[in-house]
Amino acid sequence: MTGNAALRVRGAAVPITQASDNLTHVELTWVEKRIENWIRFGREAREHVLDRRRRVFSYLPGSVFAFVRWAANDFGTIISRMDIVRAVMPGESYQTLPFVSPGGEILLKIEGWPNVEQVFRHVDAVEAADIDACEVCPDHWRHVHHRLSAGQEPRAYTMERHQAWLKRRSVEG
Image (tube, rainbow, N blue to C red; front, side, top):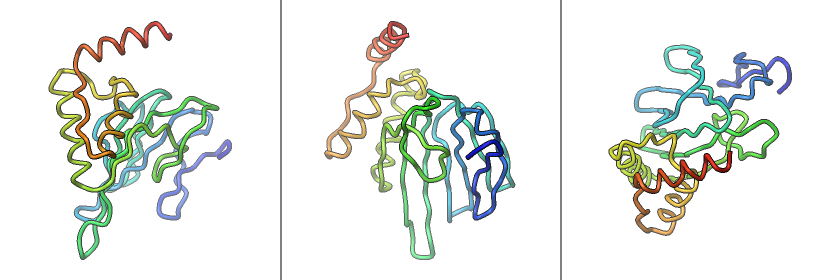
């Protein structure tokens, strides 16, 4: 995208911002019991309401957010997916992801409702420990992804682990 950036929404270009804004944009759609895309956690820098069913959340580089996608048809669920993503810095490489522009660093990718529910429980446990899920060490979300992919229980994210991460982050600058 160049100077006049736009987000493609169902075939129509919707102007959102200048490409130079360096934000990661996530399109959220909510059509009850059909398409439900939402953010489980994350601190959006900006919100743009497109209509009563669609909005775009924008994230600053380095922000971490959890993007949940669920869709169904007349026969039942066709997709259940959760991605925990870090918004990338300008010029940094990234992975593409549907509804995320330009993309991001995918820290966790889980499919299937039972697996997504497991991640929800893990996020709930992190928040119950009075830790903001956006501030969790990115390596921990990778750990959760790998453990669940191997059919194993991930380690708990404790306040001690979080304090160690905060110290490491302050040293790395």
